[in-house]
Image (cartoon, rainbow, N blue to C red; front, side, top):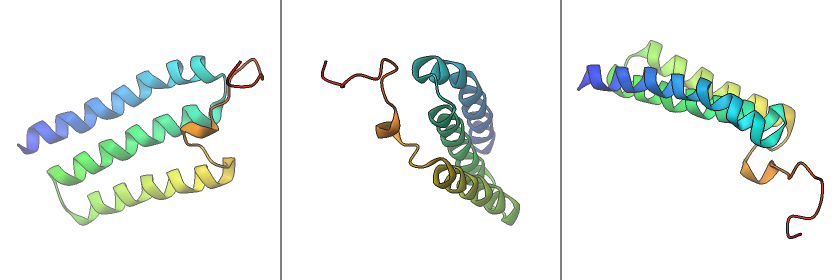
Length: 93
């Protein structure tokens, strides 16, 4: 089970790196792209922590989560509601 969780964490981190160009292409902005990457890295860190619950894993997961919070605060809200249409018009039309 531990090997499966470790492989899943590596796959999750790789998927985050692969998702970044698509997120940037969809939004045209760095803030949501960085949020997508950090969310995938948070998930990978938590998977790794589930596989090997030690203090180094806890520190790594906490560091990624803290970085996500700092980046979100520095750039403003980086959630899905922060994604605006590129054309600058009203979302309904």
